[in-house]
Amino acid sequence: MRDRMNVYFPSELLKQITELADRKKLSRSAIVEAAVLSFLSPDGADRREAAFTRRLDRLSRQMQRLDRDVGILAETLALFVRFWLTVTPPLPNAAQIKGRERFEGFVEALGRRLQKGQSFLREIPEDFVRKAPEELGK
Image (cartoon, rainbow, N blue to C red):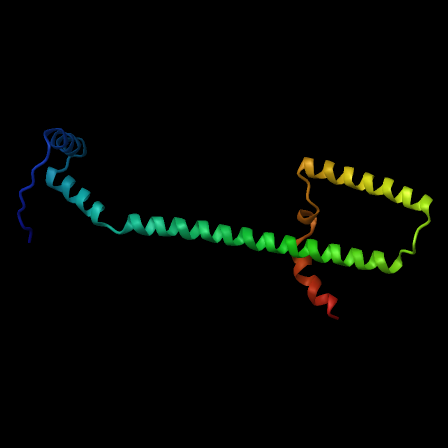
């Protein structure tokens, strides 16, 4: 059963409803009913919530990758420094000068690599990173 309701529209809006009803070969009541149902439907809010959820998931994945990269970087640096300090004897002056030259070369190479957007961390496969901590404990 349908109940009757009298509604007043501005003449321009009523003209648009009538034209749409004629084009679609529907009654004006059907057009207005569909519009009201669409307005009252929670689909809009659900779609917004789904979009926010997707964005939050993407941000979470990015943060996980960033956390992984920083962890790898810290462990790599710590391991290198520990190794270097244990195997490197004190250097004479001539060797210190050569060391400074090598360090400057390293900094230049790093600068070139960063300018090109290259990243060593992206070259490390995900599965290697997941297996490495387990294997180190053995």
